[in-house]
Image (cartoon, rainbow, N blue to C red; front, side, top):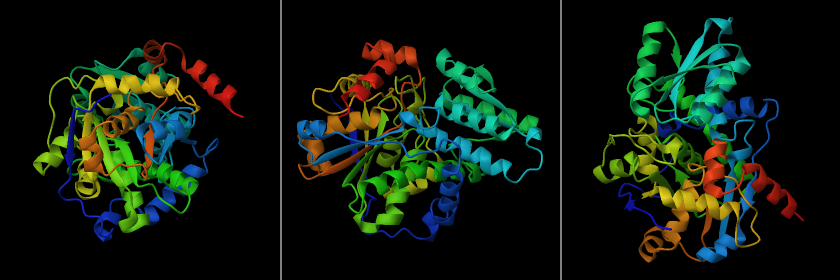
Length: 387
């Protein structure tokens, strides 16, 4: 298993305080409100933190913990925490939810979260997808009552199309990416994401991890993870490594250039939820100081990791993860196997690493084709392996 590129962040400083400028984006009372709202939803429960001692030993690490978002509500993705919370917060100030139409562009998971939030809140929902989004992801969104419209181009083209349609029709965009003039709703989305970090920290106890490997995309999740550890652990926070597909590595390129960069083209990757070519403005504002490194991986590394954790060679529990869901762990495995990367990232036999498994089998047919058996079969194997 390999990685494509690795960039250390020259701006990272462990002693930099989490001050008012950072708290204005994420954390503080706004996070407290997000946690209170989301934890009150029916069927809310913290997702599992799965210990992988066998894999840790194979990689020469002290510990590997996998935050498994495949069991997040009924959506099988961490995105359920973000878009749905932003919709709920918006509807909380309205007398007539049925008068509102929310919209967004999606690779699948975010749109499903927004549609779920709209369904729960009683408002209308229109979701835009680009040509590369699979039919299974579209059906999952439609089953929640949303209208799905396919448009040409890549993910970033669909983002622009959704914004244009919303402006013309008086709809409200619920996006996880921010840009000049549009920051309030993405801030709410990221506050929701931070709930999963809060859960992981509670389960891990008083000693934080030394490293976190987290997926990139537009940067919203990575920024939420970075900010929460930064705010609550200060200089003892873990080193944060942001992992992206090598065909959609806008954050890595931004770190190398010292300013936001755009990746153009099809952005075609099996890590569909990470096929994003433009960083989120708010996310980059945090990550440019908070992330210690950025790395990119080829598709094959994500696919190999999906197979590896579905049928582990040790006593570790079998885990279901889609291409995007496995990306953070794939980055860790690739880095741990490379002497240069181990040294750069300070990985050793005392390292305690947290990875975020951001999704389960959100495209069941794709998952079965890659792994060789269904997600249900993998989950059943895990259940039968429990003592």
